[in-house]
Image (cartoon, rainbow, N blue to C red; front, side, top):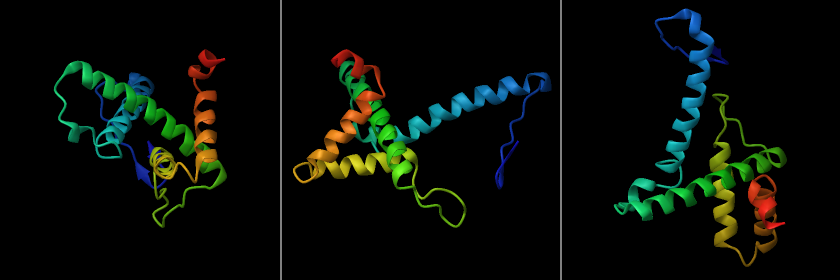
Length: 135
């Protein structure tokens, strides 16, 4: 499969299942992308060294919510202020990282950026079922 200037090569023993294999790979790649964000891409999950299962479950739940929030904010920001495309034709940042950097800036400067924080929170809640629970 050709992807712009790159190739994706997947080797499998049954060419009759190629569409299914590509679909499965696509799903798997989304999981790999999430793991990258949880580890080195922004949250540094491995640095926590948690060993208690309950605490780890709580942390992963919070990170999953934060990941979704950062991704929604990144999509929203990208529609208003597109991410710079570098000379190799790839984005300078991922959608997730774009949103996470913005959220971090807003949260660390919350007094000056309270309205932006509120806007980001409403945006996230409007795209999730959590919004329906609050109404």
